[in-house]
Image (cartoon, rainbow, N blue to C red; front, side, top):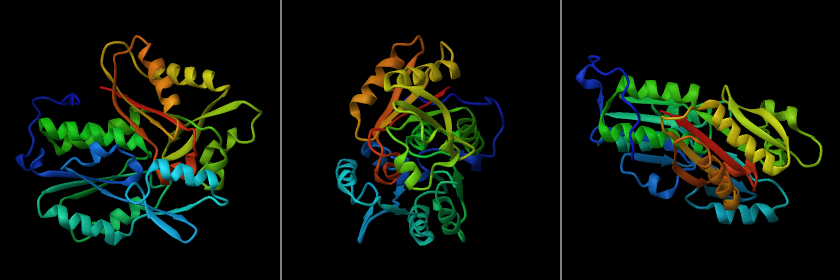
Length: 300
């Protein structure tokens, strides 16, 4: 893993603020949609949200995997519902981790999209050394942030630098996703400001982003190919030649779209490092629907 650049070399830090693999863990919820090999990281713990198909309840990523979810969604007469973990579930995870780690950073999908952040905040009551973070994003946008933070722990960092990176990521990270349809976002009640692109003409593809923690419209493009090119142009607008651009590409049962997007951004003059490629899990997929493709990146 390549490491994020160190900020503020030479600044004096309290030794107790030093963070590394020996003393720091990260907690995520399942909506980070991280691949299995990253979730298996010994400094990472995942608390799942739940998916409800009628009377059947599944833990996101644990009891239901993306392939099974999208196959079931296609046949479902009604959209499934979702629910956040309880404060007690977070409390149990924090208690387990505090036996081994002095510092825990609990990083979650936007508080404006889910009650997960609130549950995590309640769960930390009574514990020292736990910082709960609202990422203001969702899915692999959070996943890429966490992946880069694990890189900071690999080389050793400080609490100040760790939090500075999170703040910079929230302000600077590129975040764009293309949905096959807005139907699922509307039915799930998570459409936010993106309602401005609802009910568009045939073949109009909505490009969406996260803005201030909610789903917002970026632009409308006619046709999927032009939408993909608009995603390439978006990356070029927010980056410059030279420093590496750390990229994550996600998809909802649409690997061919992920391949097309990867080829487009690698064809630019930017130094592209595709750190992560992954599927959108069941909870996020309930609102994004099948056929979605997402591009998240940060230039360091």
